Length: 444
Image 1: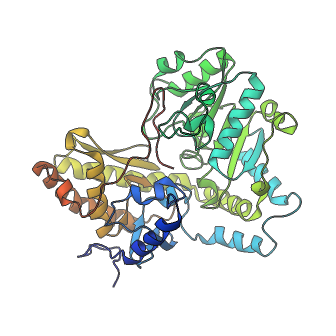
Image 2: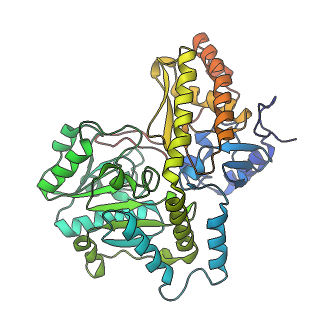
Image 3: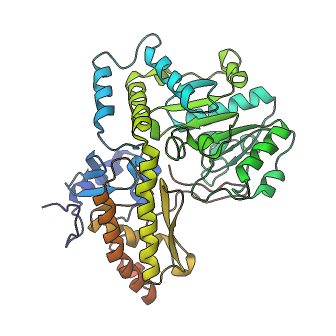
């Protein structure tokens, strides 16, 4: 029998995963379409590589093993897999069609909904991916200000203007790289050193895991306004999770532009750019940003249903409630075991991260050891708790029980200095490496 969500005696059988992986390697380079979903982000030789289906907060791999999922599609699954209200909306729209030769009425319905809930949404554009709308925001900022330079903080997708700040910068012209620099979160001086009359926009994630300190976001907004620079909030992770209206609503800061994807359609591919009407009106004639699938109706229907459910059920409050239990519970276990000198769980409750101090040893090996032991116990884990509305009290209880069993194993391995020898497969891999003036980045 395949493993279930329990304290299994054996590690998962991943025979079919490995067979698919072997087939993929012959024809795909690389085998994954999303780095954070690829085999390099999981303990090779132990972890599954391919999934078959999911329901609620649980997921099944191709070998039939079941897990509680804390990856949530790397962010988009905010309500839960195969969520009935959203799936019914998709099925109903499917009966009427997917993509059409003219605009669809759902484009208006969704835009009116966004206008109601997102503070800066004087005007709305709809697209398909986060990278699309990030690049559109940068382009329109350059057009509006007549400036070329961009300052960034966080991860903003794969397009030329941003990815040139990372080690994966081959194929990006140097002229493009020279126009973009990165500053450090919670370091206002690093922004001041770069902010001048040539900066068109500052784009940043309102938070990743660290909370803003000393009115950091308010000060960034003030400096941008004084400099005639547009402020863009990249709310791929914060939007619809920290609050339905995103970090704008939560912090009471209205950026000039904001971009969203992931959470608000429960897994369907869609993205938003919202902002000041005087800036956004440049898309009418001067700035080109159009795509055939921008008005694809299944995603629009999913978005309307998801956002409506979020508002009616106060989903952000539930994400925070369940996430706080995991964060506090992990830290309590770590304290009981005397591990607080090198591990903790922190972040806003809706999305937290488990970290390990370098003093404990090789971070990739430690993460791989945790993964292999948690997969054995029915938990799909990548170091994060990406919460969804379907994570139950039983899910939380089982996960904390697993931490209570696995952390002593990790402690013994660290104390013995032999974490690597206790791995049954290869350690996980880093996605990016920082380069000069590069922002801290994470897998997407």
